[in-house]
Length: 117
Image 1 (cartoon, rainbow, N blue to C red):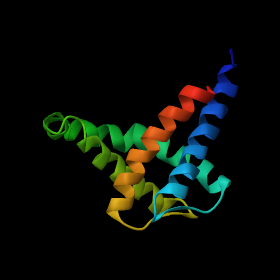
Image 2: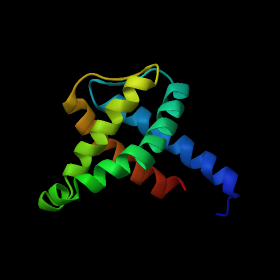
Image 3: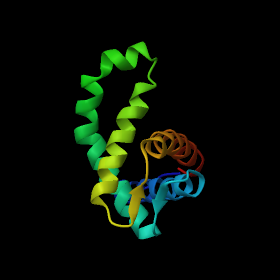
Image 4: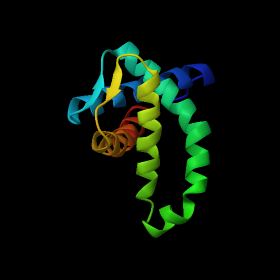
């Protein structure tokens, strides 16, 4: 299926927001107030992952290699906690919620993007 570049971006954004809602439904302590909050959280998370997340992943690359990439989820949890501090109606109660939220968010985002786009 062919989508124009703008429509593809909007569809990716909506699917990512839906992944946030799925994660909030499954992980206790990972709370998203509404779909609009999920859209804002997805946009802020994408921007933070492209800026701060890249820097953190490069800085912790040796540790990530030693842990076979599992430490990347710790970095994603840090970025998620930063986003939760900025986005209204999006909160993460604990570091474990952030870690497992990052894990499930990555998994659900991959599955949803594979099947829906």
